[in-house]
Image (cartoon, rainbow, N blue to C red; front, side):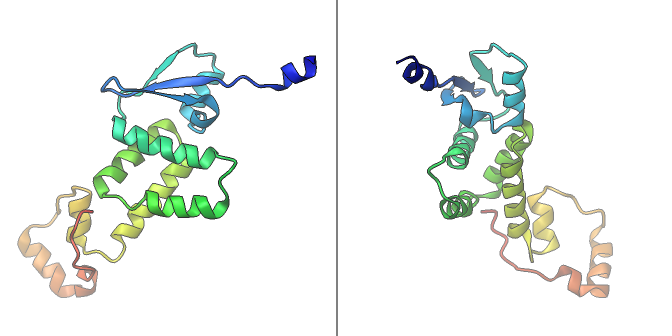
Length: 165
């Protein structure tokens, strides 16, 4: 009888709080995929609520979906692969928010997934498009850029699709 009682493991829950004041309660085993949160737990943080002051609720929900899928023992490799493929079919604005949050939370697998998605999205795009995406101003004035364009037209080739989503 004692064995049966000791074999049941009590689940521990942590509450994540967005800057908007929204709270989401999650099982600790899911959340500790974040090295930042895992370190807090291991260091004995007795926080009942973990404030995530720089992660909005929409981004937090996306990250939680990712963590749940990647922590689930019922998910097989094919399901995870398909989930990841669909997960990154989002606009640049959203993926940059997730990248920033994944970096803050130290979730390397999510960081790598999103970085690869951004790289794939800008592959074969024009330099003007890439500058627009990353909000980079050109170092050249229009005359200098025209001269460079004439000398190296191959450097300005790329997919003319300039949609940000």
